[in-house]
Length: 135
Image (tube, rainbow, N blue to C red):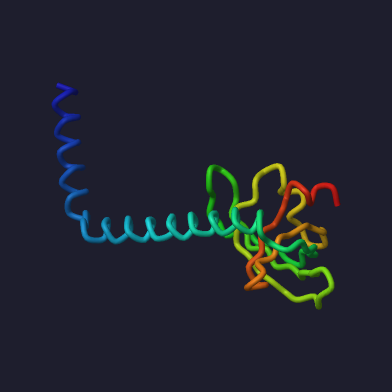
């Protein structure tokens, strides 16, 4: 008797879910997630290019905030910093990126970090976390 009662409850739950199911919204949500994934892939490609072709600089972190997003259990953080380009005038930059767990101790206000700066757009930077640990 318990088996049929459970089956009846499952049918009721299924009908309740179907009342609120909106395939159009599910598709829109999926498309938004794909846009976010594409933007992240573009940012990773840009970072890989900067790691090779960017100009060296250092920065001082002035603010850090978690965005709430996680990628592979690594937090995505907004990092505000002052960039000190070699032979140039310091300027502020803000980036949002994933910070891997080993480098979280360096992602704090007041920390000095190493960067690579895009030669065509100085507001585009890549943080070299591994080299920054030595600072």
